[in-house]
Amino acid sequence: MKMYEISHVRQVPGERRRRWFSSQEFDLVVTEDGSGQPRAFELYYDIYSAEQGGVLCREDGALLHCGVDASRGPGGSPATGMIVSRRTVFNAHHIIPRFLDRAAHLPPGIVAWVSEKLHRLASMSEVPHPAEESGRSSV
Image (cartoon, rainbow, N blue to C red):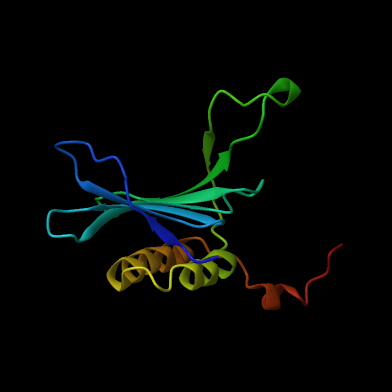
């Protein structure tokens, strides 16, 4: 399913404009400056699975890859809140192609900017491509 823009995002007076894009797999919140240029983002992937994770890009360019635990509490009741933990490996081969496919019709400047940041994160946290792992033993 392609990502679409949520049209009525709450804006906080005095803060930068936020735009929210969503699909069944991704949530992307982009913060823009006064000229409409992206400055920061939060990209959450696999949002309805146990493998949910996120990439945060701050305005200073710092990148953080995190895991998200939105599990249920005792007896299946909702947990008190989501727990975010730092992940060390960003599986770019799994996430980037899916993001680019689902975001293909979003504003090109936003997609290119987020994609560049995701590729930069991937270069900092390499995980072997599945084809490279096929020759490995599972022992």
